[in-house]
Every structure is written in structure tokens, then in C-alpha cells.
Amino acid sequence: MDWKAARSRLPPVRTVWATLLKTRIAIIAVTAIIILIVVWDGYRGTANEWQRFYCFGPDKSPVDMSSNEHAQWTSHLQTPVIFNHHHPVEINASVVQHVDLNKVKSTVKAAANEERVLILTPLRNAAFYLEKHFDLLSQLTYPHHLIDLAFLVGDSNDDTMAVLSMELERVQARTDGVAFHSTMIVEKDFGVTLGQGVEDRHGFKAQGPRRKAMGKARNFLLSAALKPEHSWVYWRDVDIVDSPAEIIEDFANHDRDILVPNVWFHRYKDGRDIEGRFDYNSWVESDKGRKLSATLDRDVILAEGYKEYATGRDHMARKGDWRDNKDIEIELDGIGGVSIFVKADVHRAGINFPCYAFENQAETEGFAKMAKRAGYGVFGLPNYVVWHIDTDEKPGNA
Image (cartoon, rainbow, N blue to C red; front, side, top):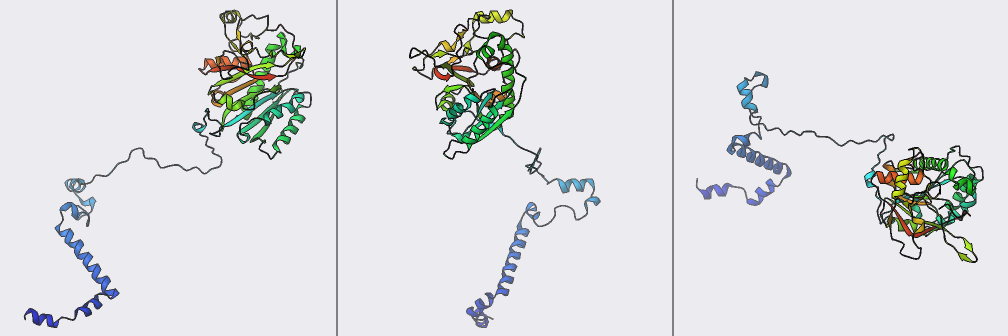
């Protein structure tokens, strides 16, 4: 039979295509082609390629193999080994809380970075000052939704608690952006019976017991109010009568561990403001002061600014002028407590207010000594003035 005769017996091309395109026949044809390709690839492949299609090794159970056969059977294996592999752990229990303090920073761009500020104020028989205190707090330009307020009321026999509660309610009820992120009142008595008069508060004999009690009050307030989200702590006394509204931003711009302003007071004589110097607890240590401390018992607390202890220290209150460059800094060895701006991590590191004699100092001056011992920087701004109420003290203490 020749080609022409065979061709004449073939069905027409159109008939062939119609048959092949039928669904069942097409599937069978494709399957047959795939099987042919796989079998052909297996037959022409190497021994390693054959392993893709059947189990390598003798055709017997591993328990029936000799040691040589077993070694030959496993010689081609390269099983990957992962050491110390740990799957992530997911904790959904509400009793476990995670705090990442690495994310809490204290920077010069505090407001832009939305860094939280905690303002702390210890109170004792302070009802008279609270209205002015809240007026000044309301004027702060730092975003109030980033500010938390906390107060400690202790050993008071006036209406401090009632007035404080009403002022907080008044401020927090405002809808014009003045309300703060949160507020807290802590109550704790320490058995202080000293009066609030000038001699009672600022007399020489009262200084040791008073500073120890104040140290305790500050520490109790700090431990109750400081939260993981706080970047800065601003200690602010209730009897401030005037201060810059931008004080938080101004202080943060200095990027110091601990920073205090100068503290003066207004007193008018013959129509002239004498601009009295108030806080003599911010000072630079002197050789005379070091020699004096070396002669004292370790439990004695040095009260600065009194003739009983002539330290010869350089007081920041005697320096500066609010009309000059407010950003000039000086390094300090002791600080007062009227207005203290602190990076929160300083407190978290354990630097608090000694309620005992630490290097013959207590409370804020002991705080500065402790901070410097730990390697933190303590600075003051002699030209940046916060105005304190005039306590009508007699001249001569300093």
C-alpha cells in the first residue's frame, strides 16, 4: 500500500479535529501525553533523578537490611538541622501585661513627639493657693492632652482636699482644650505637726524634720503617679504666683537630666519692686562646704542659707537677671524644689528624694547629690525666673 492509498483511507481533517476537541477525548489525550513525558523523562534520567519517582534503596523493609545495605540506603540523605528554633509565643491572657520602656524617650521635640509629662505637686494646708495654681496650669502651652496631674494631700487641717477636688472638676469639665489627660489625688499623712508660719516652715530648727517629711511626701507621690508612658516629670510647688506659659517646652529644649529655674519673689517698697531672691537651695558646692561636711556626723542634715552652717556655697538665687538670655546654664550641686524638670528615666533609675541624710543633705538637695553620684547632670538657669509668693521673711537668713 502506498502513501496515496493510505491517505485516501484517512478521515477528513475536520472530522479528526472535531473528535479530538470533544471533552472526554481531550482529557484522555492530555493525560496520556503527560504520562508519556514523565515515563520518558524517568527512563532517560540519571539515578538521582529516578529518586523523584520511587523510594531509593533495596526493595525490602529497613528491619531486614544488613548494616551495609542500611548505610548504602541512607548515604544520599542530607537532612537539614535547625538549632535553637523557636516558634513565636502568643499570649492572650489578660493577666499578663507587657511594657516596653525602650519606646519612651525624653527629647527636645517633646510636643512634636507627643511625649507625656507628669506634673506633681505635694500639698499641705494649701487651699489658699490652689485657685492661682490652676490658673497658671491652665495657661501652659504644652498640649494638655499630653499632661497628667497628680497631687498628694497630707497632714492638712484646712480645706485643701475640698478646694483641690472642686478645682480639678472645674478644669476637667472645660471643653476648650484646657482639660488635662488625667488627674490624681493621693492622700497620705506623715504625722507632720509643724505650723505653716514663716518661723515654723523656714526657721533653722525646723529644717531637718521638715525636709525629711517633704522627701517622704515626694517619694510617695512619685511612686503612686509615675506611669510607663511618662517621658518627663515636672515638680511644681503650689505657691508659684507667676511663670512662663512655655516653661515645659523651654525646659525640654535644654535636654538635661535635671533642670531648675531661678526662683525670686516680688516685694514692693515705696512703689519699687525689690525682686527678692527666694530659693537658696540651688547652689554650687564650695571648698568650705566640703570641709564643713567632713566634720559633721553623717546623720546631720545641712540646712543651706542659715548662719548656723556657713558653707560659702555659690547660690544661683544671687545670680542672673530675667532680662538677659534665659537659656544660659550653670551646673549645680544642690537644687530647690519650687520647680524641677526631670527626665522620667532618672526617677526610674532609683534617684528619688532622700528622707534621711544623704551626704548631709535631704529632699531636693539630697536628690541632686544622689543624681550626680549616679552620673546624671544637674543644671540651673540663672536668667529664667519663676516667681514665688512673698513669704515676708526677715532678711538675714542668707
